[in-house]
Amino acid sequence: MPDALHRLALLESILGAVNLGAIVLDEQHRIVLWNHWMARHSARQADAVLGQDFFAVYPELRHKRIDSAITQALRDNFQSLLSQTLHKAPFALYTHGAAAGGNDGEERMQQAIAVTPINLPGSPRHCLIQINDVTIAVGREKLLREQTMVLRSQTFSDGLTGIANRRHFDVAIEKETRRAMRTSSPLSLLMIDIDHFKDYNDHYGHQQGDGCLIRVAAELAAMLQRPTDLLARYGGEEFAAILPDTDAAQALRMAEAIREHVAGLRIAHAKTGNEVKHITISIGIATQHPQQQPTISALIGAADRALYLAKGAGRNRVMVQSL
Amino acid sequence: MVNLSELENDALVEIFNIGVGHAAAAMSEIVNEEVTMSVPSITFLNRADAAALLGSKKDGERICGVSQHYDGAFATEAILMFPEDKSLEIVRLMVGDAMPLQELTEMEQEAMSEIGNIILNSCVGTLANLFDSELHGSLPLYHVGTSAEILSSFGGHDDDAVVLMLHIDFVLSKHQIHGYVAFVLDLSALHDLKQQVSRYLAKVLGQA
Image 1 (cartoon, rainbow over the protein chains, first blue to last red):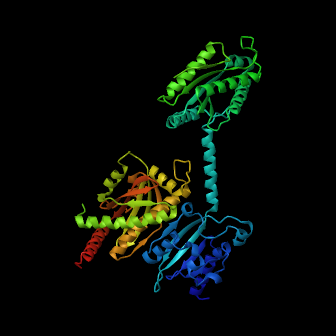
Image 2: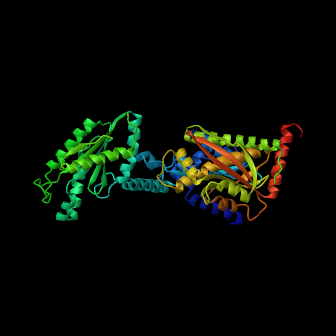
Image 3: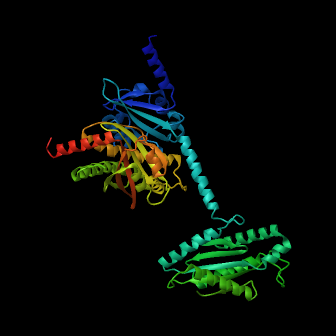
């Protein structure tokens, strides 16, 4: 076989074997090359599309970015890149062949496309459209995104009890005080502390202490059912509940119900130092009224004072302090 | 360093504004939302001053760059540059789907490359059309680094290289983002560019 013919046959075989879509258009946008990869992943064989106008085969791509990319290649001699991120899947191509796409509703292959001018001596400029299958990379990034979201949510939750952590509380209280001011609605804060918890830990050991925290946190969370309520572990055995759109009277009723509920669990506590031999909680309440200039420190300070008063007055009770 | 008359300067600013106008239209079509871009001014600088201009806010601040090489009527390396956080903002506004990461992922880098590809081809294309000449353009390359690192990786070690710097204002979804396009030109390319500008002016002013 003469060298030139041999080279041509070799090039044709390579074009048929490469793992990438190749379409060549002439200066009239007619398809002059359609490789085997294109035939395999689209429903169209080369015989059916060769000689046809590209936009007659893909009318939906007219006036899209690929249209101007082809124009820039043929007219201006410029190369263009069409990223998957901005275009997803312009061509109806399927990773497992076109038949699979038709039958099982397989999603289109995700595509990265390059449009390149081809300058041939003695004939008008052509352009090459290369299509890469980036479906796997897209899947990898989706996984990365999901895992990052999980990690981020973990940095906002308490490792032991699974409820919001202190960092989450700080962000939420900031957001809710501003929202309360804008919507002229009251905002209440409960500071909740497990009574004689140090004695519980000393007597039953830290593992059972942790179990007690987990149990109480879950019971508190179950009591706060509104989606805007937020229960957070504030520190040690102390919890905080942010209650938006809740005035002082409603907060007091809520706190009383929570206190009763926890006492009603009858979680045994032998070392309370008094006749009550189960776990109880003390709660301090503060409410920010719509007409008040919100300050987060004043709100937290008042709830803290109320909790201190509840402890001083004998525990297992609810106290209120104004800002 | 570079003596352009006021008329030549204005002509170049106008040409680049037409160019980024085309780019904005192409990007609007992609995101289905209005994108506007303008070039308020251009400056000629040496490489060190160009790097200083880009890096002036914070020392060692990282810049994202998208570069393409052009040759033909004149040869240049064109680089679109944004501070790294701004390129994050642009890509995520364009994509509309926030990746919760402080750096662009590979796929997002490719999107940024495409944005650079659109802007650079539009600017250079308008230039070439008006000059009635042809340039050959490469595919875009993505870079991250300080402005000095990015600018020094082009045009060899020619200390005479001149940077034609375009200030670009980019507005998308009420966000306004400032960026730059730098054309690194060696002295002969600069000479060719100036000749093209004066030829163009002579033509439009009817003095040809």
